[in-house]
Amino acid sequence: MTTTVSAYAATSATSPLTKTTVERRAVGPHDVAFDIKFAGICHSDIHTVKAEWGTPNYPVVPGHEIAGVVTEVGSEVTKYKVGDHVGVGCFIDSCRECDNCKAGQEQYCTGEYGMHGTYNSTERDGSPTYGGYSTAIVVDENYVLRIPDSIPLDKAAPLLCAGITLFSPLKHWNAGPGKQVAVIGLGGLGHMGVKLAHALGAHVTVLSQSLKKMEDGLRLGADEYYATSDPDTFTKLAGKFDLILNTVSANLSMGAYLGLLKTDGTLVELGIPEHPLEVPTFALAGGRRSISGSMIGGIPETQEMLDFCAEHDVTPEIEVIEASYVNEAYDRVLSSDVRYRFVIDASTI
Ligand code: NAP
Ligand code: ZN
Ligand code: ZN
Image (cartoon, rainbow, N blue to C red; front, side, top):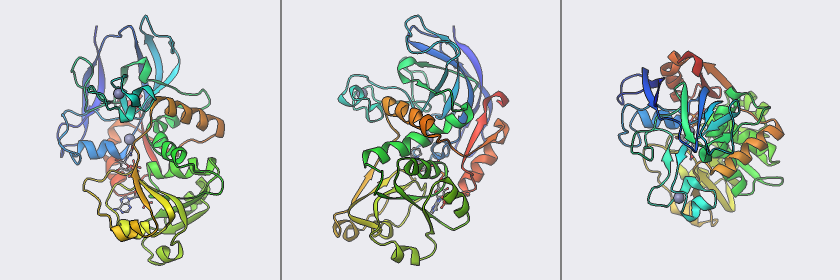
C-alpha cells in the first residue's frame, strides 16, 4: 500500500514552494522506508526549481541531502534494520550493470536505464521521484547510506551532497600533505571543501568574493584567505595551486583562475551554472593545465566519506530552519548569505 506524506513542492519556476502531499510506494522486498528527520538545501535544488537547467517535471519536491531513521525494511533487506540512522543523496537508482555501476561509480552510470535522481526523475515503474523536503521516503537498500552514530542527523544531511561532492575530487586528485588546494566560493559546498581538504592534510586557500567570511574560513581550517574582488590576489597567487575546486554557482572568468594553477595543475568545475563557461585556451595550454569536472560520488565512496567525517570529526556548519522558511532560505542562498548550509527540520513540514 502506498503512503501519503507531507512535502514542500515548487509548481513552477516562479512560484514559491508550498506545502503539499506526495505518495510513497509500498515497501518492496529490497526497500528501506525511513522517516526523514532533516533535509539540506543545495543550490542545485534552486537551479532545478527555477528551471535554470531546463524545465523540470513540476511539481518538484527538491531535497537530495536526506537523513532519517528506518521505520520498515523489505523481506530481502540485509543491510539495514528498523531504528538505523540512514541517508540518501542525489540518486536512488541506476542500471547496476554498466562498468561504472559495477565499480561503485553509479553517479556516472552509462547504462540504458541510467542514474535516477532523488527528485525530478523517475522510479523503476516510471512514476516521478520526489525528494527530501518531505516526511518519509522509500528507497532500495543499495542506494541508502549508513550514518555513523557520532554524527547528528541534522549535520549528516549536507554530507550526502555537499560533503561527497568535495570529498570525491579531493581524493581523486590526491589532496593531502604537500598539496596546495584552493576552494573558490565559501558556500555550502565550499565550506565542506575547506574542512575536508584540511582534514586530509592539504594546505587550503579560500578564494571568496570578499573578506567578509574570512574569520570563519580560517576557523574552518583554511590556511589562507583572499578576496577575488582584489586584483592583487591574482598576481600574488599566480602559479600557486596544484588543485582548484570551483564551487561557484555563477560564471567566473576562467582565465584569471587558470593563471593560479601550477604547471600540470587542475581546476575542477563543481559548480554547475546555468550558462556555459568560456575557457581562454592560452591560459590552459601555457602550463599544460587542465579543467575537469566532478559530480557527487558513488555509493561506496559516499559511505567512505561519512565514515571519514565521523573519524575526523568533520561536520558542516548548519542553520536549521522550519520548512515554512524555505523560500526565504532560497533568497539568502542566492545572495551568498548562507552560513553555511540551510537544513530543514522535517518535523515542521
Ligand atoms: P552556495 O551555497 O550558494 O555556494 C556558492 C558560493 O559561490 C557562494 O557562497 C559564494 O561564495 C560564491 N558565489 C555565488 N555567486 C557568485 C558570483 N556571482 N561570483 C562569484 N562567486 C559567487 O551553493 P552550493 O550549494 O555550494 O552549490 C554551488 C554550485 O555547485 C551550484 O551550482 C550547484 O548546483 C553545484 N553543485 C554541483 C554538484 C556536483 O556534483 N558537481 C553537487 C552539488 C552542487 P563567496 O560568498 O565566498 O564568494
Ligand atoms: Zn546537491
Ligand atoms: Zn550503470
